[in-house]
Image 1 (cartoon, rainbow, N blue to C red):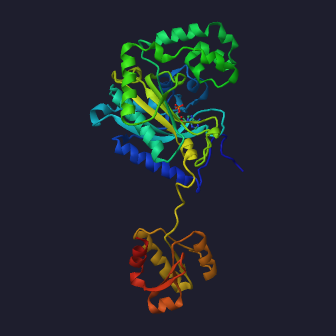
Image 2: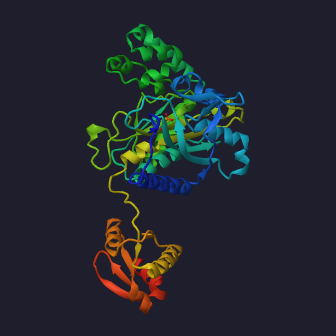
Image 3: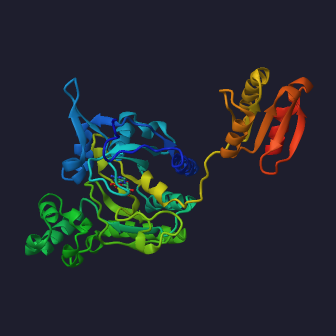
Length: 426
Ligand code: AMP
């Protein structure tokens, strides 16, 4: 037999209800905040990510599913959504057609990573982006969308961390200080960090290797190198978060791995094993539920007008994992039709369709079986009512309606039975 690829997974009944719940909550929330959905292809030109995500990132460097298609074009299964969203915004001049350039997307992403709990090769993100707005209040709004999402999903132990990595003016000053501070210590760091030191030193802040930590703890903090404008902006974001009572703390290590971030960066971390994680599952080492930030140069870099942008991506696998266990139940049928005999079966099938068209979740064992077997099935699927049609009922033009919780049975006129069930359910 053929198995699913490593790092990919099937989402089956029992779990899929949790996904649907997360999707429903996310969609409703985005729409309430004025974001509209955009669906971009999952396959793009490789160049989009090399330029957008950045050639020096781990994603582009080691993790992309890229290949040459039959026409000779280099194409990539998207590893993240932001470059595609920017491309769509530029390609369709969305700033002219949308009342506000606030968009969201949901769908699969692909990264060739080492799979572990909460980390897959095909995973899904909710992606939220805003273009064309500079005010710190918009940074705070995007963070608010993220925070409220976590709250509305009932995920506890969420920890919002923020930072500012400066702009194209002040970031080089910070980078210079970073490289100087690293100095000879580079040779004492892990081999990954030694590689990062030459191609993308910011990534060193992400390192989790215990032996490297004392060195990393001594490295400079980005916020100490901000220019006046970036400092004011960051203070504005904090003030707005405070005004909305959104709890935050600064993490100097939150520089994020992508090249395009400017100014505000943020993440929301979920519960790890040490937090107890009583309600949902704990996330283990991969505990970032979502992350994002500002990217003021990216739209222009990708050939668009000089417009700022800010957004975040939430890992849907991790939201589903962290969701409290009891938050969603499987859908149960409201009615199961039980028919005994050939004539009853014909009428049962008619009734089944009437119920469904009237909005009820209705089932019937279409392959004729004994009364006992049909009742057992109705019990197993936890139906609210069974609607029994046998010879007697047919002769009298009635249906026996059995309330499965109480065992109470009522004879209802066949003509009135759909209305009766609907009324009982209401
Ligand atoms: P990033 O696009 O790397 O900033 O990631 C944003 C969010 O997507 C993270 O906080 C995770 O929740 C999720 N994520 C990133 N990579 C993976 C992965 N390989 N598997 C599952 N979730 C991921």
